[in-house]
Image (tube, rainbow, N blue to C red; front, side):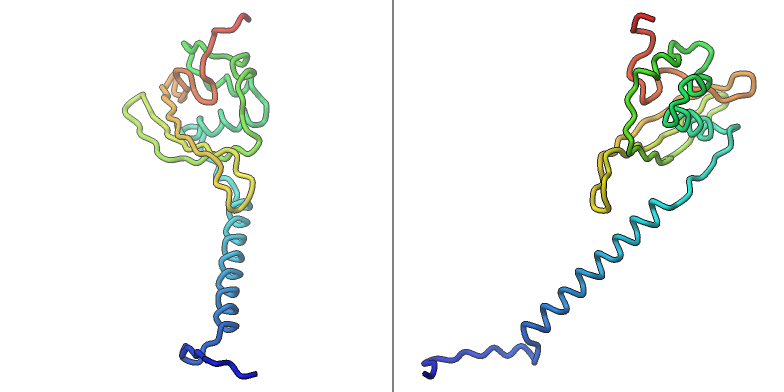
Length: 161
């Protein structure tokens, strides 16, 4: 049998199969690029900042917390801090935590270090959850120390010790 009506579309010589192949190649290229980007990001070595700088002290503080060295982390608190290692013991830190330095400002013997804490990322397309925190530091005896109640703590000195 012959069709009663035929309909031909002039697509400039490009068939449906060719369009699908091009689309598949674009999708594959995007997947490869995103995988390579995720690998490079994951394998990138952390920068070690100087312990004589406010941002270096914040890095040491957070590194100690992540490593479970809460006494060491508490050593970065200013002398008048109400926080101690027992407060850090109660804090929650995600296994997927990644911290990025955003900015540092120094004004005499005071400094502010802003970080972004990214948690919950489990794959190359999952950004997780990012929250910003600012640490306030002061100089005591030539060393930068953390004041106030620094993240990941939410309160200090309130539990029976």
